[in-house]
Amino acid sequence: MAGMKDIRNIVILTGAGVSAESGIDTFRDGGGLWEQHRVEDVATPEAFARDPDLVLRFYDMRREAIQTKEPNAAHVALARLDREWEGELLIVTQNVDDLHERAGAKRVLHMHGEHLNAWCTACDVRSPWTGPLLDRPACPQCGAAELRPDIVWFGEMPYRMDEIFEALEQADLFVSIGTSGAVYPAAGFVRNAREFGAETLELNLEPSQGTAWFDAARHGPATALVSAWVDEVLGL
Image (tube, rainbow, N blue to C red):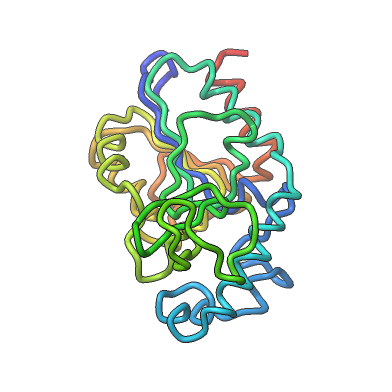
């Protein structure tokens, strides 16, 4: 890889592996909350139309659970990089928890939405939300009882894709952390970054489905790998 002196603009993609060591289930964890439900039953627009109570109860549990978790060393390290890196930096996260922000990161984009928001389908406003949605509370903006989780479900378009591709086009370095390489469009970002001329690095617990696309890869727990990598980047 190029020396960091040649790097100014960094795009980081984070996935479930970053939050796993904080105790948040990854999508494919055995025995986790996701294993008790089929994706088709809780994470599609069709599921919400068919059985809204099931979907709302599922996301109410997840919203409640993440509020009991704390950022881990990987979140803290990325927040330090965000704070100290003088070039452009964008943390694009597939995660819908708020652990990047609670660790102190500011330059964060949630492409799959956020658990701690509710989206009103009547007025299209997203409001901060920490309580349940099952009892059909009123929208703080318009008063309609048409709130849903502010989560990008399968079959829906991820948020702010134009901003993400613009950042990838300008990136000197693209780093993927804790992702399976299986969920698109995020799994294709490494190829987009390469086409735009960026260096690419994977930090993951084990080789992902997209490892072969990266210039370099390091495998192990996110808390150890990310902390060490940020130390390298900042010259510590």
